[in-house]
Image (cartoon, helix red, strand yellow):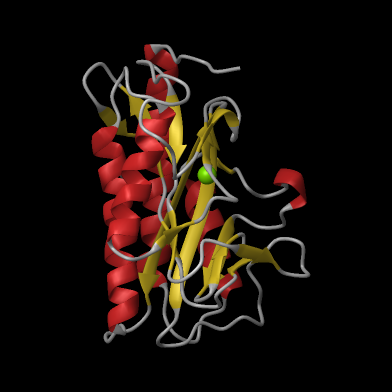
Amino acid sequence: MITLKTPAEIELMRQSGRILAKALETVMKSARPGMSTLDLDVLAEDAIREQGAEPAFKGYQGFPATICCSLNEELIHGIPSKSRILQEGDLVSIDLGAKYKGFFSDMADTFFLGDKAPDLVKKLLLVGKNALRTAIETVRPGITLGDLGYSIQSYVESEGFCVVRKFVGHGIGKSLHEAPEVPNYGRPGQGLVLKEGMTIAIEPMVTVESPDVKILNDGWTVVSADKKPCVHFEHTVLIKNKGAEILTLG
Ligand code: MG
């Protein structure tokens, strides 16, 4: 069921989103070569709990941690581990969620660890970020999910990259994942019409040569089928009367 949020619910989602954005900022500022991905997870969990919220991913369908931390050719759902050590030159993707007073927020960011990103990685990061921004700028009541997906797909493909189809964005609110599904591809004019008061997580995933992905034997980690680096960016967004408000801002 697609829910329209009341102003009071929206305010709680805004607070949930703010907590989450601050937690992610803490993690990204702290990330250094030599730290483990589990170190990042502990930082994130502490930052979320210190602000009175709970990690949303921990225990979700059995996921064991607060963040998903995915490196290089890993796209999403990487499991933090004590033995996974960050190295200079890693492309680091962090996805996390919070629950605050019953309301969820969800966001992701990808960054290069080090000073000299290869040109391909620089371009991937730029295109992934712009894809999310383009999508958010496209959002307003009256457009369809097809319009939204098309805005992402047409931009990413015009830059010579691919959008992943197997994983999509989603409605969010009293549950982490609500209807509708929010694909990163689509045809203009098709699909559900967006309405004021809906809250959705928009999360483009951009790959280099193939839009295909594989799930590793741990049952969680999703990697690019082309084994090239890939990026993931996500915000939780409110549809307002004239456009979108990003709820996951610090
Ligand atoms: Mg999400």
